Image (cartoon, rainbow, N blue to C red; front, side, top):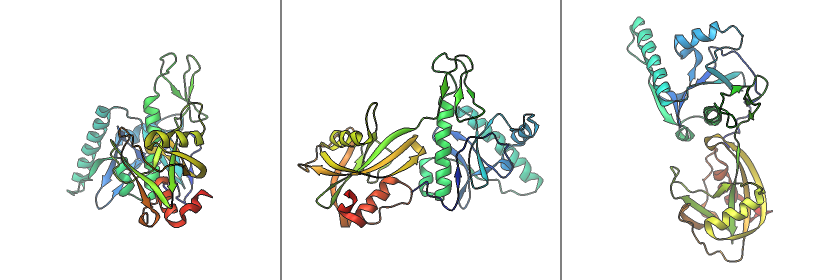
Length: 313
């Protein structure tokens, strides 16, 4: 799955670190990320950003680098940072500065090869970059959304400040503390007579096969979420609920929990057309080759192909 990047090591401990030239800097605009795109997609190193940003970083007196850069995490010894730009207009200005400097640098080298920069959607990276880079971008996006949406206190309206000891935004006026948003959700492999229930969403960008899925509500266990979501989306009762695995899913700020469950009673589907465009029983032998090595959903499909109803044990 997306988080399985061993032997590389992901470090999410919150620290204040100085950004080095060899570290990665992410610039987001909405659900898009600025990337370098030539023969392949890659991310920007600090040394490739504008002289203005580099100079600001070098001149900071507190030893922790530029206040416009937020340390996110590291993978092995490479650190990842967020350039704190929140609006589309600000993001476009940063790109203009970047292009101007590249033109200047290349003209001095008498080279016409200007770096090809492009905005790409976060979800498109699932099919265009390595698993490690996809995980890094999705996790960075998760934190970007949280930082962007929590600049002001929801209690008193004052500006929030990043805490110096933990990943938290603090209001110095009223003491409110805001931690990263992590939304728990379930993925359910519903099984009946050596078949698995596969679905397609009705109104989402993702058009491939999926499994029943949904968010855990207030006061609800994950197992209760499984029962409710299956009933709401396809009108089926389930039993013998078995936990499989979990995964972080930064694209939607989720922690996903995978379960298998057996149909109790009839297998007749009552489709919620507001949620799904399709739900159908697919025989085990037709589920081969589904695993994309990224998502929990696809791994669960492949696991059912390999193990059938043993998934319920």
